[in-house]
Length: 445
Image (tube, rainbow, N blue to C red; front, side):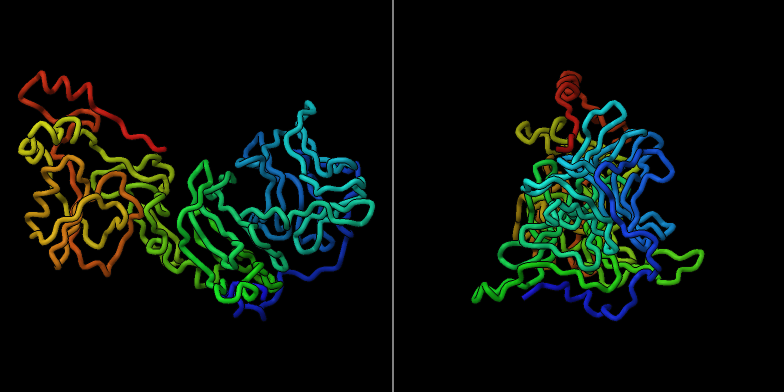
């Protein structure tokens, strides 16, 4: 049976985007071309709902893209990629439909930047069409479709678009960065459709945080085999933060009309659903994920930590001080000195569920705190009513706000107000010199 995103089926009766008289047939002839930076650098669908052409990324670079032409809010639904980066086109670059290679993008000096990967075909290209569905199709002289944008999806599914087995959507890296991001929506060969995080740049898939449940282990022939986005006039998007949403735009918009997101999002709480032993979670290492009212993740650093990139809340957090083990190594018996220079701060309703490295039980709360204070590796300690004491190490993964949490959580901070690369004072100046030389800096990988 065909697999449908069942949570979206309720909206089948809603109206499509636009109905308009056809002003062109959407056909692009061999030899037709567009130039980046020109006012009319686009090919339109018959009713002008969709455009294929150049979208500006900055003053000097453009992206080859498909977007909703009638909507004032620029809504890009497809973009050309070269490996894991958008195919950047400097101003005056030329996109041409050719007989041998289909779409070919070259800069003003004639250097090749991108081309459509045509399916095996001995017949030359006859023409292309910007369809009313938002699908750009290249057709051979034998009337075969030899390339189409629907077969190379990015982060968006349009009405009537189909994802076959082993096909996938990939999120953007950031909201305005079209590079491949950390989230995927995949149609697996076992019949399930899943959302999962990946490692960059290897693209190793981590644990799924949403599973459709359409696999039938007892009768594989009854398992799902494709994702069909029903033609109801809406937009399905895997957002850069890993949340899969369905949105719509009114048929008769007003001046201030914008896209509306339909609830529920998938998953309904990404802060709690992304887990597993590998990966950072939605917000990056050492951070805390909080769900907003529109079911999107909001990220912040705990006390004593600062963002890796102040302009990107999803970049993760770095400790303001890193010298605990360099200054007070476990093997030298300086646990009392370490205890004198650190403190534990309670962080209520917060958890990093996958960063444990030791478990003590039964342990009192005070014994648990002391165990973390004298351990230079311990970054966070969690104690519950059953007497379980869990020590957590850096980097802290999958941090989240959890108001149902019954455990007591403490994060370890330095008492020192010195810069993060300066260890606390040691009475033995020789030991201080050694500590300074051994001090390290955290790197993200």
